[in-house]
Structure formats: C-alpha cells, structure tokens
Length: 263
Ligand SMILES: Cc1cc2nc3c(=O)[nH]c(=O)nc-3n(C[C@H](O)[C@H](O)[C@H](O)COP(=O)(O)O)c2cc1C
Image (cartoon, rainbow, N blue to C red; front, side, top):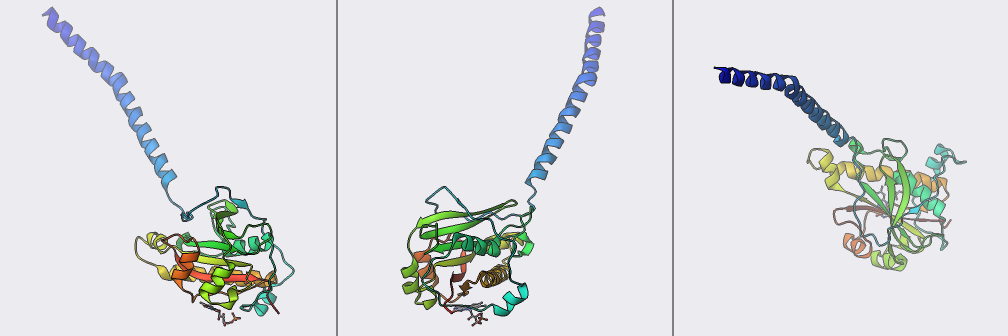
C-alpha cells in the first residue's frame, strides 16, 4: 500500500514538474521558433532585384568613376531641340568624366531604393551597359562593364579585358560610325530576368522599351556635353559576340558609338 502511495506521489510530482517547467519551456521554444522564422522571411522578401550579370572578369579591381554632375548650362528644351544622331567623330580622346556622365545618364542609381535615371518595368533593371574604350583619357583601351549599384549607387567600371577593338569593330561591322569613335556603349538586356519578374511569362517588349529609355537619356546627355552619338540596332550579332565579351544570356540591343562630333 505504502509503495503504491509513494509511486502515486512520484507520478504526481512528475506531473507538477511537467506543468510548471516543461510546458512554459516548450511554449518559449515554439514562440522563439516562430519569431526567428518570421524574421528570416522578412529578410528574404525581395523588394527589387537587379543583380548584374556575370562576365569573365580579368581584373578584380573596379574603377571608381568621377561623380556625375547634376547641373549644366543647357536647358532641357535646348538639348531636345539640338539632339541629332551623329555618325562622324574627330579622332580625339574623350575624358573619363564625360564617359562617367554618359553611363550615369543611361543607368545611374539615383535613390536609395535602387531607382535609376531610366525607368524599369516592375523595377526589374534587366539592362547592362558595357563600354568599349578606344581613346578615353585615363582608361586602358578595353572592355568594361558599368556597375550602377543595387540600392546604394556604386558608379564604377568593372574591367573585363584589355584590348584595342577600334579597328576590329569598324572593319567587322563595316559601319563608318565606328571609324574614329573613341568609345562605344553596348546596351544588352536579360530577357529571362524580365520574364521572372512577370511570373515566368516572357516580357521582351519591356526590355526593348527600357533600352529605348536609356538610349534617349544618352542622346540628351551627349548633346548637353557637346558630344555626338548614334544608336545602332542593325549589326551582325555574331560579329559583336565574337569581338566583345557579352554574357551568353544577354541580348545585344544597341551599339552606341560616341565622341566629339565632326561639325
Ligand atoms: C530603334 C532605332 C534604331 C536605329 N538603328 C540605327 C542603325 O542601325 N544605324 C544607324 O546609322 N542609325 C540608326 N538609328 C538612328 C536613326 O537613323 C536616326 O534616329 C534617324 O535618322 C533620325 O535622325 P535623328 O536621330 O538625328 O533625329 C536608329 C534609331 C532608332 C530609334
């Protein structure tokens, strides 16, 4: 009898311990697990995605570009009136500051959520801008990629390859606009990135439209800087891909030779 009573008491004690400690401890654990899960979820929520596509990088050191100017002596209206496609350039180098201003006009990040000088459907930012520098003061002749930045402006050039492409582009593409051009911009688009933003449904149209927005910014910026440029959309894709390092998933939309225009 006494043994049974002792056994009952022990079981009762265990029950009290269970209620007093184990239940609160389990509750704390469950609450902590939920809190951690919801915090992780919040962190993962993508607000905007605009990663730069991967390219074959030969040098790890990016080059900081001069800060873009936010003022000029031109009015927007005068720039609009004077804008023209210019296909002939004098054989003279341009400055890194001019190149920096052009790149910023095309895709520079201007607000802390990642918004850029050009608009983008669903803030997807599917465009990349590559620079072929032929004669740019302070830059080795070669290929570079513009790094706009994600939420914080980065505004740098990523060197891809040291190479003099001036003659090869002119001869390969058989287009006189490349003859003396000290620099060429290449705007490419990542169609998969845009499709992803639309739940997997292709939206190539938006990517081409965005290239148009960026190109118009460039036309106006070039005019304001007294530079000349032309947007070229008819070229041999194979020849460009053969000469320039373009990520395999990118569509080449525009080639834009620019420099000091021949008047
Ligand atoms: C979508 C598009 C594609 C173009 N493609 C070429 C081209 O492949 N080669 C070229 O020399 N000019 C090209 N241009 C420039 C046009 O020829 C030029 O805009 C047109 O002659 C009007 O001249 P403007 O730009 O001086 O007003 C293109 C323009 C646009 C808008």
